[in-house]
Figure 1: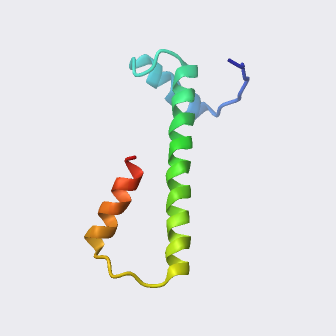
Figure 2: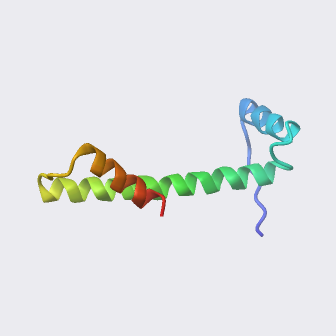
Length: 79
């Protein structure tokens, strides 16, 4: 595992310390790695939505209902 040195603003450092003190995480490293994982997962979802929007814009209209579109989207996001 690589080591990094980062600088944090005081409010961000205080927030990290509070998370550790509340026993939510055992270390700042664990918390930062979790935040990065969450951001990466969120980016995957954003990329998927962007691709779906581009495809939809290029394909014209659909006869699917709002409920059908929502169900398909949720199904695709959940795996």
